[in-house]
Length: 378
Image (cartoon, rainbow, N blue to C red; front, side, top):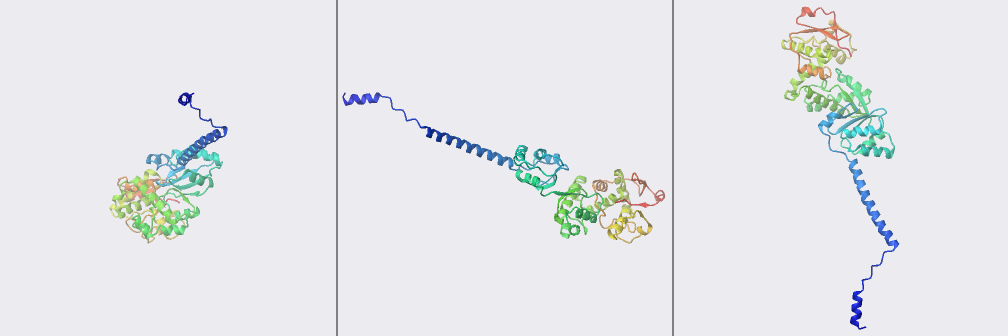
């Protein structure tokens, strides 16, 4: 066969097939595919877990208002207070946190709970928001930052608030009184007085143990201004002196009234007296002199010798408002001072101690029938 024919025959033959890979090569190839899949899936899972752990954006005002309860509330945009109730499960806590917009996913919270098997501790907690889920859970599981609940009743004085805070181990009472008299804080809050008496709102607070007294004062003062905004939205248009007069009167009403619907009537009586230059003759101011200035026990009955005490806070001994507030007024007393009931009454007296009812009169002849003078108890 000629060389040309040989070349033609070779050209017509099909090409040899590629050599098939052996078993070892196939194993390596499958392992490569599996490793790639694991790496991709693992990376995706890690990204997903990091996303779930990351804090969500700031909750909307509607969300904050909806979930501002005694057990979960926003002090401001950055501070969250939460109470883990006795017997409450970790899953239930996670559900509340998700609904309030504090965590991104309750399912991730539940996954963490199942993974570590730790229980959240009953108590009160405070943390800065936003915070990752792992940090929030670590706080609740370890029981750190448990807060003291301090209830400050309406009508108490700075000294009594100091005692309550010291008893709860929140801060030293003396340090609190010093902070409440700090000229720089008074100037910051535009309070024209020597102390913040009357400007620290009576409420239930959650404070960390051993908190700086200055921070405690700020928290209570900030609460006062927020509450005042609800009572009288235009308060900022008043001068500090004008506003102070309202707060002083509210602090007196707070110590005088016992039934809510009588508070605006009492405020009207005091305004009527101020308008004609008549002494307020508030028993509450005399009680303030005896207990807060003289340091004596709270009196059950006032006598002539008490109403004659020569002190600027004694509104029997001098006309006009006292130099400053005599107590911490709450919502009802503040509302009464800003929205008094107009009347021609100039007097009122307690006629039913059990019900706390007073009799309002237009002249002294009606008022003189009172058997004695009473003051509001502690």
